[in-house]
Image 1 (spheres, helix red, strand yellow):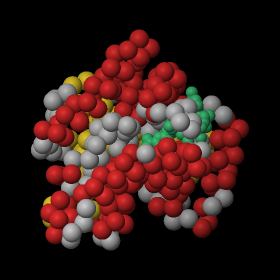
Image 2 (cartoon, protein in one colour; image 1 turned 90 degrees about the vertical axis):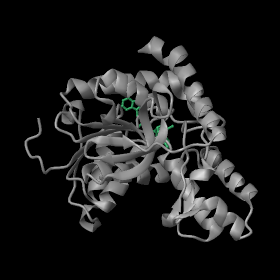
Image 3 (tube, rainbow, N blue to C red; image 1 turned 30 degrees about the horizontal axis):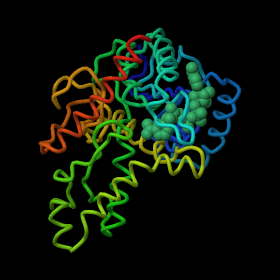
Image 4 (spheres, rainbow, N blue to C red; image 1 turned 120 degrees about the vertical axis):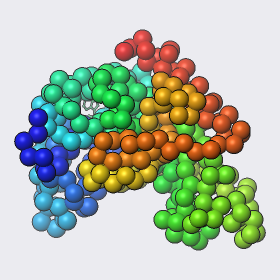
Amino acid sequence: MKKNLDLKKVVLVGTGFVGMSMAYSMLNTGGVDELVLIDVDKEKTIGEAMDLSHGLPYAQSKMKIKAGDYIDCKDADVVVITAGAAQKEGQTRLELTAINTKITKSITEQVMASGFDGIIVVAGNPVDLMAYVAHKVSGLPANRVIGSGTILDTARLRYAIGEYLNISSANVHAYILGEHGDTSFVPWMNAYIGTKSLMEYVVEHKENMDELHKIYIGVQQAAYEIISRKKATYYGIGLSLNRLVQAILNDEDSIFTVSVYQQGEYIEEDLYIGVPAVINRNGIREIINLNLNNNDKKKFLHSCATLKEIIDNEIKPIL
Ligand code: NAD
């Protein structure tokens, strides 16, 4: 158990592009007292801990950073898993299922063997399925296993709508729901500019709904485009993961679209999928149940069916 309850400790498993982008973001924002880095590539991980620590004199943070091992999870508040194979050009996230299920299972077993009793945040892809694996393998309550879900997709959408309408993205309240992947969707009826319906705003300002749909397609395809240009995506998800971990550690009760275990809140059960949820020191405090129209309900169910088929055919045989 934790000796010093005020000490905020995070363990990062996976010191690749995504994990280290989160670590770098954490160094800049502060709010974490101890960050332990774990990866199968131990030499690289020692190098990453050294490199990051050398920036501390100029950072906002007094964070202690070290390369460690799974025993360090014992008294951690949050373990973030970003380890696993990443998408290659032309590859979908779902094509990573088999390899990353084995990796996520093995990591989760080692995290739990330490006596860990905190919150697991999963970011490896396909993230909804990897969160499901971590939940089932860890045996932790569902509120304490969170997938990054559509947190990044939602950030991309808010940024792009803000640019198009020339409104600060802080005042764009629009979500991407569903799988973090090709079956995600935007419930446009539930999108707002400030407190005004986005659809009304668009009509009043003689803007075009078709443009908004194109924005969604751009967001849905963003990972493919970035990967084809620079081989990987990491800053956006790194910032998003840091933001999510801060919301947990600071007991914020903030809302993010994350991958959450479903128990009938949106009809379906026994899968992880992206929905808005209130996040605090207990992980998921509650799912925000949006009133979806029939069209959006169909899209949500299609996204669920896509994930459930893979859970049944590919994941359950491995677990
Ligand atoms: P990367 O190849 O740079 O890093 C992956 C790291 O995982 C490597 O350092 C590797 O050594 C480590 N690793 C592999 N197997 C391991 C194991 N069994 N135990 C410990 N460490 C292990 O890849 P990346 O670009 O950092 O991407 C990591 C994952 O994040 C991928 O699955 C990628 O698809 C995903 N990703 C998710 C999002 C999101 O929005 N959730 C966004 C971008 C990338």
